[in-house]
Length: 317
View 1 (cartoon, rainbow, N blue to C red):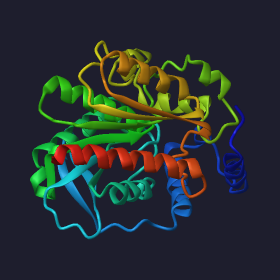
View 2 (view 1 turned 90 degrees about the vertical axis):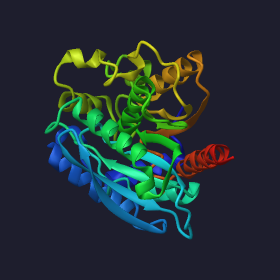
View 3 (view 1 turned 180 degrees about the horizontal axis):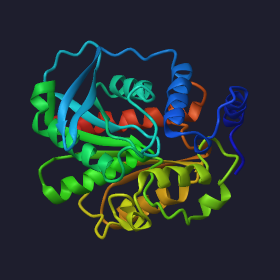
View 4 (view 1 turned 60 degrees about the vertical axis):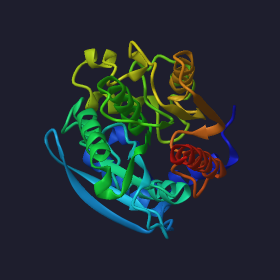
């Protein structure tokens, strides 16, 4: 299917802004460009009650977590959404995904904890996984400190962040030391093999994420080719996908990651997990964050917020 007209307009704006493909930049340059782009895109901020940052212990030092609290909410036992930003495990930051965090916090009337995990290539796989699990475990075990309900916690993220979310969910299932009631996977990275049809169909010309870009991310993130088959890098390769929490999975049709997202949805269903899979025709990778320009981005955010509200309500009764 062709790109949505709103996507074409957005890509024209990006072209006029002279944004460079990440794979032509150094990681530091690519991070700077992403944060600058987000600052322009998200100049109008969704209001929340408060935002604060806390430091929690991690496997290699402190991990910064940004806590968003909803407005007009004095409840000390709020539901909690643990969120991991996207960026190929190489770029992205708390700031680049600040508006997404605000939208989810406000729209679902929940606490949201955005985790500043370590990035590659300075910190290769599995550093991001280790940070993501450590931060999630701390939040679960210390929910009362931030005013969260330990029995009403969900996890999620976009792209590489969704990769971390499902890996943490698998680890939580196996260790049985964290109770997650749902997971939200927005165009997730789940297979570093790059062999799907969508990788050839949408390799170039369909937004900022290309096949070359994914290869750049992979080369920075993974230490060797053997890591590709490690389920913590490619969770679709996990030997057992059963026992995972209720899942909302969002895919964009014109995205190199499209087919692996569809595969994951089918695999989770086959393993007995409740899955709500929504595929957006004509959309590109990143459309969820580009809601200021894309109506389907706004709609996808509403889908997630509505499901969050339903899940949280069930846990409260």
